[in-house]
Length: 322
Image (cartoon, rainbow, N blue to C red; front, side):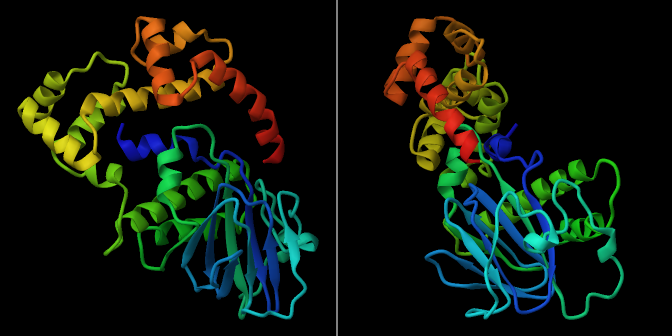
């Protein structure tokens, strides 16, 4: 397991809203959900994404934009389009409600045929983002990011174009996986862009020493790690590992480990309602529930039981909003 794979664990399609709309100008689709992450890519033609409070972004074939919620956005044929905006949300699932032809695997066979000349096909995937694990990823993203055609996501888009043109059993699973694949490709390309300023966790995992240590910590977070054992497994001295780790990530290895364990614990406390605090403590490497509670409160500002109660009260409202 590596850092990026861990951070993506809470960002999965899993039946989230998927839309593929084929449009002829003029058009104006207003996406109002404000999902935590929304991926927009054009398979054919061109159009403009107009995020609320941000400049318009033109999308050509295979260009991709990711919008971070709660910002909403509109997809138009051109800025200042004369088309009456059609509100698209979770219920925007039929052509009469905005042109969406594919949602949760639904397909309109009556729309097949023709070469689509002059039409624009937009693919939209709205992602829920759950828990604390993905927070460092979300914090690293701007409200709007774009990746132009020609990156590693292009083959995925070819698969998407093929899949949305059919209606077969298991289609939703395929679309979910393709959307996950597309999002990962897009974000990796954006994080690696020339002249960019990627977060420390992204650059650190590419260091041959620190990257190895991070991989160990994320693969076995509950193991009884010491700096000496991490250094031995990374093939360097304790002092070398400690210095390089602090230089790249801004904190010592064991401080990073404690913070990551508390992040895992925060999600476990909410997701495993039947687990006791002692069970959660053991799952993240603490044999003593008291020591775990002290560490959790020091980093989170509240004890595990109170965190669980507060999160349990907030979660139904969040789920209802989604």
